[in-house]
Length: 479
Ligand code: 6PG
Image 1 (cartoon, rainbow, N blue to C red):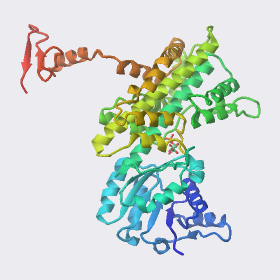
Image 2 (cartoon, rainbow, N blue to C red; image 1 turned 90 degrees about the vertical axis):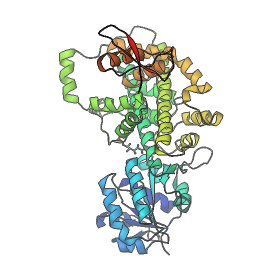
Image 3 (cartoon, rainbow, N blue to C red; image 1 turned 45 degrees about the horizontal axis):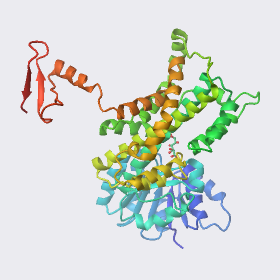
Image 4 (cartoon, rainbow, N blue to C red; image 1 turned 45 degrees about the vertical axis):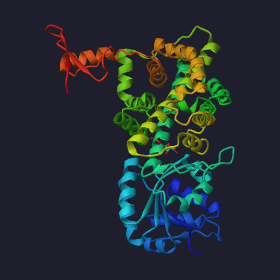
C-alpha cells in the first residue's frame, strides 16, 4: 500500500509529528538525511507498523500515493531550499511540498511562487506547540497554494489539537506566506506573554519580597481566572521546582535569554509596515539586554542595582500586578492583530482575524481562554479596527488601569525594569490621546529641514513652512 505522506526530517518535531500521524491512521514514509536517525526511528516501532523507512529520495517518491505529499521538518533557512532542490527531480506536476518549520514568511512567499513554475504546489505551514504539541496535537497555521489545501486538510485537521468545542486548531490562513506570517505573529505574542510574566515575577520577587513558592501559588491562582493560559500554568510549575538543597531551580539558571529569530522578524516587519508594535519589540530587546550579562554585572557595580523594601498593602499590590499583567496582555494582542490587519493589506491576504484567534485556542504555546474573548470581539464586529474599540476589552482596560499604574509605579520607584508592562501603558495612553506632542516634532522638522507641516485650522492637504530663524513668516508650499 502506498504511503499517504512522507515526513522528511526526523528531529524531535518531525519524529513526533510522524508518530502523531501514525496514531491517526495515516500511512507514513519517513526519511532523514542521516540514515542512522531513520534506523533509530523505525527500531522503536512495533513489528506490525505500516511506517515505510526510506533511505533515498527515489524510494521516498515511489512509496507515495499520487499526488505525492512531502512534509518537511527542516531547520528554517537555506537548508529548506537545498532540501526542496534535492526533491524536485523526484516529483511530478501536482505534487505537494509542505514546509512545517519556522520559516520566514517571505521565504515561503518566494518558494510558493518559485515552485508554481515547476507545477509543484507549496504549503508553508506554521506549527506551534513544541515537542508535546507535535506529538499529541499542535496548532497548525497553513498557507500557500489554496489548491493544495483540500488535498491535505483532512490529514492535518486529524493530527491538530482540538479546542474544548471539538474544533481542530487547524484552518486555512491564506495564500503564499500567510501561514508562516501568522505563525510569526504567534511567536511575537509568545515573546510578549513570556516577558510580561517575567516582569510580574520580578515585581513579586524584588518589589514585594515574595518567595518562589508563594509566587508559584499566586500564578496558580491567577491561572483560574482571566489570565488562565498555558504559559502561566508552566510558570507556576517551574517556580515549584527546587534543587537538592531546597533552593528554587530558577534562581540557578543564567539570566541570559536566547532567541531563534521569530520575535525579531515580527518587530522588524512592524517597523517596515509602520505598526506601533511596542510590546513585542520591547520583549525582543529585553532578551537582547539580558544576554549582555557581563556588561550588566559591571554596570550594577558601577551604577547600583534594584532597591527593595515595600511597606504598603501587599494584597492590594498583588491585585495591581495581576491587573497590570492582564491589561498589558490585551495591549499586546491588540498590537499583534493590528499588525496582521496592516500586513493583510500590504501583502494582499484575506486574513480572518476571529478564525486566527480560534486557531490559537489549543495546542500552541500562547493557548488561553483569552482567545475566546478575542474571537467574540471579531464576531461582534468583523471589521473591528482594534481590540481596544471592543466594549469588552475597553471596559477591561478601564477597570485594570488603576492597578496597572500602581504596579508600574512600584517598578519605576524601585529601579525594577518593566519594559513590556510600562511600554504597554504608554501605548494605551498614547492611543487614547486625541492630541499628542507630535506637532512640536513637526515644527522641529520644519525648522531644521524645511520638511513642512499641515495646520489643523486650514485646508488639511496644504503644506506649510515657517521661516523659523528669520522673520517667522509662514508660506504655503506647492508640491
Ligand atoms: C512554538 C514555539 C516555537 C519556538 C520556540 C523557540 O510555537 O512551538 O514558538 O516555534 O521556536 O519556542 O523560540 P525562541 O528560541 O525564539 O524563543
